[in-house]
Length: 169
Image (cartoon, rainbow, N blue to C red; front, top):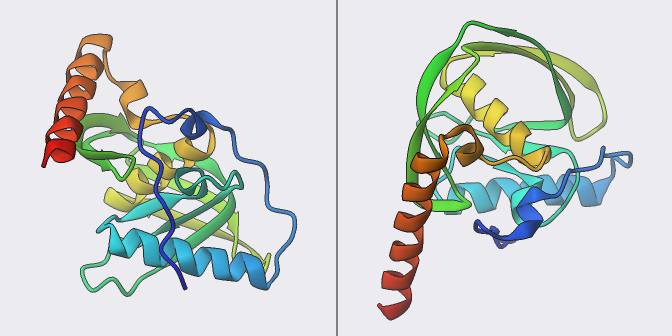
């Protein structure tokens, strides 16, 4: 397994729309394993392939305390949404930045596993938020797109300031 490089905003590759996965083979399984390792190493709860510059419809998530409930969704699509919730989201492509985003409380998703087997999943709460967030990445969308222009501008300036401070060490 290996740690992949996570793209950081404003990298234009984060705006690339992912293509469906058509080949379910050993290299896909290896890629999913690498995504999990990368997500865990970065202390994240979700990661989309777009964030590691692979433009295929693959996302991974693990909201468990023990990091022992890995979930890989390939070619995921949301079938149903219900309710709404405001949740403070962060993103591995926006280090140190958090903002309140309104999303569906519950989602029903159809996806494929690493072997290409189709399954459906109904989730709610933080995992529903995570899946919606990662699916947005696969569509070339990022969570700050949901914010007002003013709020987005403030957050992006804060991120740039943090970046400069880190660079000057």
